[in-house]
Length: 128
Image 1 (tube, rainbow, N blue to C red):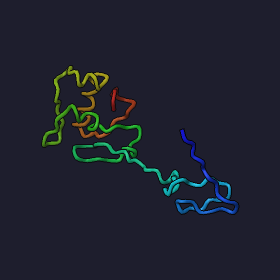
Image 2: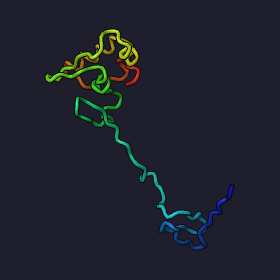
Image 3: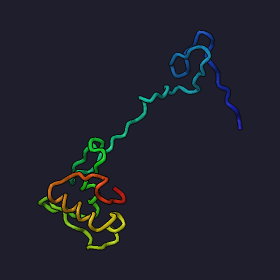
Image 4: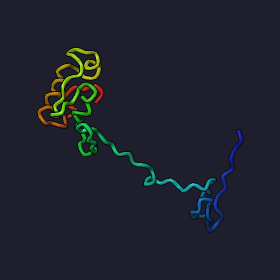
């Protein structure tokens, strides 16, 4: 394995390959790429599906889950905006996602009554 010798800035400082100044004794960059700073890292925005076709910033609702985002794979939404089951009671898809059939029913009923968020600590959802 070849070792790469990293050079240091001369006494008094010098410009690196990336065009930035380095004080004397500091390691010089080996590429022309700019320095990475904590501010230069990309910031990911968390979005969640609130109702069909509407994404919202979920960080605003920390500690809460979007009801529709949680039940969307298991329901069909009619023209009136009401959700109805896609699978029969006791179906394996619902059993593997929710801690109980009652948890799914609670979310479905809440969504149809106008609620859009639920407390993550209140309802047993395995993969919210």
